Length: 264
Image (cartoon, rainbow, N blue to C red; front, side):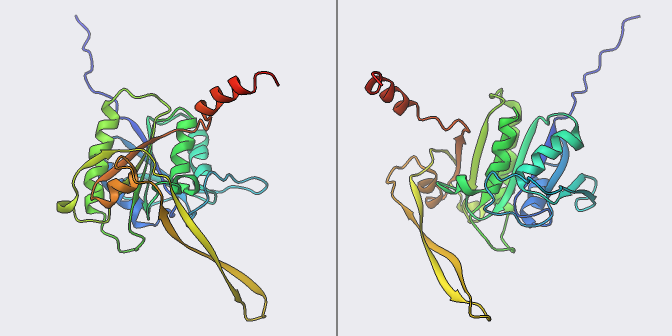
């Protein structure tokens, strides 16, 4: 008698994390957008970790606690950074590499230079370093009451495409959503990172003990007039997708130096 062959495809394992903390509305909306696309595991910081970049915890213990924040989904809160969350998820919770890592949805933009400082994107980059394809998602709205409905729609479109595409295992995408209702979004643009940065200022004040402290402020300056950048796309109502990489080698300069400094 012929043996029956199972046609049931095993669901992909999807790790979800963020930098705003496990109770942030953004991560709840990310889970809702993809919860039926795979086996979801959430490992996220127990408190906000914005601006942590690629920081890891050294010299103090890390703690993991299982929580029931998301109905029917295994979830853990971690005392460390977003990068710590990815490392611990792979080593101590999953005991394997997930098929995909999603980070976000961040409250606030992570376009242009923000990708360097972003805990959201650093978690995604850490996953890619570990050969886990990943995506970082951010919405250009810092409000705790931000409307994520349009972002949820596009998260699902992008994740579905990611799961069915045979991309390099080190793939990492930086996705930003404009703070617009769905009917005003013009679609998706594949972009490059804009040359833009913050012109920073530190406000100096005195505390009640008359000791000085400083508060970081500043304004965002876009010095890039290109129409193929993430800043342009977002300003014109598009969802921006920037493929990023953790190899920081400047290959053009490398070649130049090899030629001009060859006699050193």
